[in-house]
Each structure stands twice: as C-alpha cells, then as structure tokens.
Length: 382
View 1 (cartoon, rainbow, N blue to C red):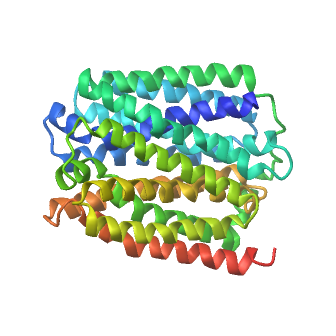
View 2 (view 1 turned 180 degrees about the horizontal axis):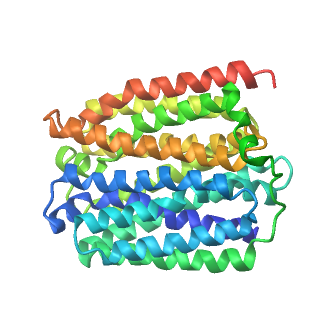
C-alpha cells in the first residue's frame, strides 16, 4: 500500500464524517438544541458555505509547497471540529461548522494533485479514487459510529472523534507524504487562463446541478427513512452503514471504469442513473425494503461521479491546477448548500419529506446533459 495515499485518505475520512454525520443526526440534534429539522438543515449549509469560502484561498498558495498546504489544512480540520464539539448553542455550532468546512475543498483540490503525483502512470484516476475512498469509508463506518454515539452518548463525542482524526491526519501526512514537485508558477493571472475554455465550465456545471439534485434528496434522508419508510431513530445507525456502502462501491467502481473509459462518460451515466433512483424513491419510499435499496443505489450515484471529475479537472486546468481543483469543490459544496436550502423549503412548505427527491430530478438531468456534452465534444475521439 502507498502510505502517502493512505495519509491523504485519512484526511478525507475525517472530512467525510464531518460532512455526512449531520444527515444522520438531524432529528437528535434538532431535539437537543430545541430547533426544527428544517433549521437544523442549515448546519449542513454552513459547512458547505465554509467549503466555498475556503477553497479560493488556494489562489494565494501557488508558491507554497504542496505538503505544507496539506499539513495546514489537516490542522484546521482538527480545530474546527473541536470547536463544534464544544459549541453551546445553535449559532456557535453554525460558526464551528463553517470553520470545519473551510479546509474541505482545498484539501480535496490539493490532495488530488498530490495523489496524481504519487500514482503510477496510467493509474492517476484510481489514485484519486483511493484518496476519496477515505470519505466513503467514513460514511460506511465513521458516520454510523457517530450516529451511534449521538443516540447513546452525545453528538459532541462524534465531533470530538473527527477532531482527533484530523490530528492523526496531520501526523500521517508529515511522516508518509513525500515532498512532491511544486506546480509551475504561471503568475496570479495565469491561473485563470484555463477558465477561458469550455470544458472546465461543463464540469463545474455538471457537478453543480447534479449535486443540487441528488443532495436535495439525501440531505433529508433521516426524516425520510424515519417518517416515511417507518424506521426508528435507532435504526439510522445501520441504515447509514448501508448508505456508506453505496458511496464506497459507487466511488470504487467509477474510479476503476474511468481508467478504462472516458471519465466524463462514466460520470454522465452515473448521474443519469441517479434520475431513475430519485423518481423511484419518490414513488416507493413508503415501502421500507425498497427505500433502503434505493438509498444504497442513490448514494452510489451520489459518489460515482466524484473521482472521474475530480481527476479530470486537473487535466483541464493546466497552469491553474489548484484553482481548478478548488473550483470543482466549490461547485460540489455550493450544490450541497443550495440543495439543503431547497429541500428544507420544500418540506417547510408542506409538500412532504419525499418531495425533495422529485424536485431534484430536472436538476440532475441538466447536470448529466452537460457532462454528455463534454464527452461528445472533447473526449469521444481523444
């Protein structure tokens, strides 16, 4: 095993718990803080907004060694989640969630570049997939453990575990990640040159619309499974394990396919499959076994486009790799923030907990269309 890639994956493991834990504990946290579920959903948006604000800072880090950037980001992961564990009320937790999100986009952005540098020739997408696998393992194991701790101890213990994992990530990167070659300095303005071409915008648009559509549904998976499918709050621990399994398999399979086929085509077909899942969930969520099976397929679609596009953007942003890698994370998490808001408004308006899945369908359709355009225009013959 490449220990450097393992160290990078440990960081995405921490980030995965920090981001996805909230979906599984919304009901408990809302009850503990004496707020509504729709207001608790704003804590999902707070994290996503932190990502959108933190990622652009890479514009000013083009001369900083990549390893030093990763060490700094790991330190912020630890600090932000420690603040979340100690937060006394909603607004303090909102601020802590914002801080926790600041390193997310930058970590994935720089981490994708470092992972590609550590990979064997022809295995770059698989290397990025391995790094992202840390997040899927978090949803498979870390989030369920956090949900269990929330049910039987307190949600604060879950965030404390994330803080400790961030500290372990810092130590692992320091020991196992070598100093890799820095990026060529194209100057401040030179970093933006790739934005004058169409492919990056097709990727950003595909990510943004696909993410809004899928997260509009997944952000409220807790009340959907408990209020509609009929599961208990305690059942959410093993349900989140299955959700994580879907993410793990989706990321793994898509990463392997993208080493053989064009990444844009893989991502486009994954999102297209997500449309069928959303429609089916809207229609059959009241049937408990079907709800679980569709949730697993949905989380596989949710993560299946990640590694192909995260790797592709590095290739499409020559001279501005860190900016490109950061921008795709902004697109992902802007999508998350918008999705949580849209889903919350739809539920608050009285349309029901499954309505966000229906609302997400046309948005995912737009995202997959943009990715198909990228494939036919730029990669089909490449």
